[in-house]
Length: 68
Image (cartoon, rainbow, N blue to C red):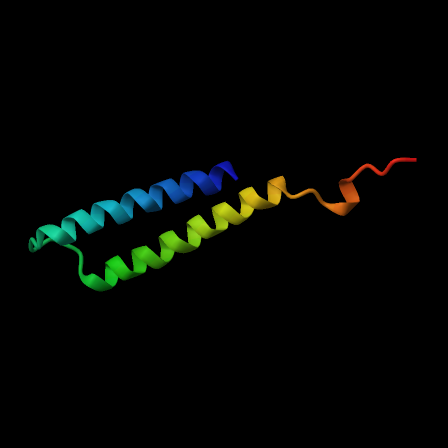
């Protein structure tokens, strides 16, 4: 999960950087399709991170201790 969090952080940073560059409308700014791809990638990575964190907190029936 730590690798997932690091990867999500890197993708979030890339998305923010590209978005700022697009807003400046310079010649070297990324095209709109790159921003859309970044959004989809960021959404998927963060969704996976949230789901992984959720699975850590959900007790599974085979690991629960039953009283005697």
